[in-house]
Length: 139
Image (cartoon, rainbow, N blue to C red; front, side, top):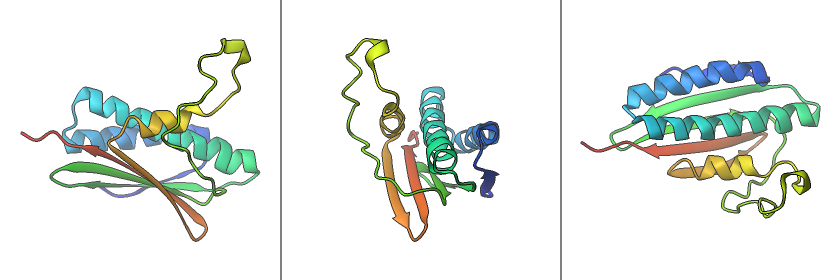
């Protein structure tokens, strides 16, 4: 598949969803795996747009790439927003509080990392790279 390059704005989430749907179909993912991948990509893209760009007073692009091999579908998302350090394996500690006492945020990265088989983040120069991998069903 060709890469997808979109503006770092919330309106781009529709194009990103269409791209991920095409990738999941091409990889032959089942409905549940496809849904979980959509959720993970949407959470990461939304975080990039709202925190990496808009929240930091920046504008930029998101570049998505797909790689499909015999065993996995890999989606890479790159952006030039601010650097950050995701805490992918920690469930936010405020979830047991009543809704009105919870602080916003913290669940997106958790949802993303727990809905794919492998997640990684790295800062390369002035760019962030998120890699999301889901295993394909072996027949």
